[in-house]
Image (cartoon, rainbow, N blue to C red):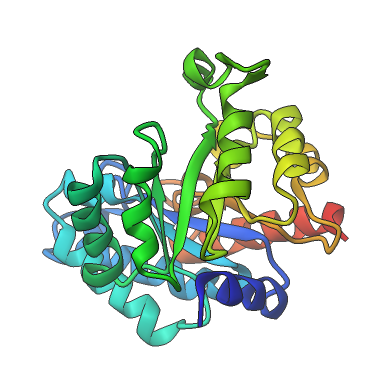
Length: 273
């Protein structure tokens, strides 16, 4: 099954546009996991089990694992997702960007080593830095377009032929690069007007939308700007707000994560139908 087919099925089966981000921060993990050799794996596994029926995708951020020399635990998490929740897309958030031969190795890392259904990439070295990912014709290539951070405007708003660069990127991906039909774009929830502009350019192409929850993006504005006519079209990511929903003492972390994930999923659904 292709990435897009799997994503369409997950939107329908879980009635959800929520993407649960897996960003394990050792300083924020519950105490019982901090000194375990496989503590990151065990923490993420419990988060996955608590939220899987509420999510349309899971998105591990590779830097949080690599910084802790926990790539093996990331492999195990990806394997756990594939074995137990094969119907839910696995998006590896890597934001890779390099020339062709090196890009092919990054693609092997994402698709072969981790078994990801899709990976995030940076387009600013041009098409030959993105093309190697498309050799895996059934996998998703999620391309940075209008990012949620304030500094994104430093480059993404540069004028390119009378329009900002992020709109030029959206048009390139939609009209020239999407030969396999498996491309998506990253567009931040913190800029709903730009999100609406991208949606108008790319039609029903899926959008990975970070920026709600801890980053403060407004759910109503995000959904109204980015949904398709069918009320889908987005993977709206929340990471820290779900992972670390429980206080240091009190509510169980997995139950708290589920509570916040369900509240977020339901809040999104208020505006998408």
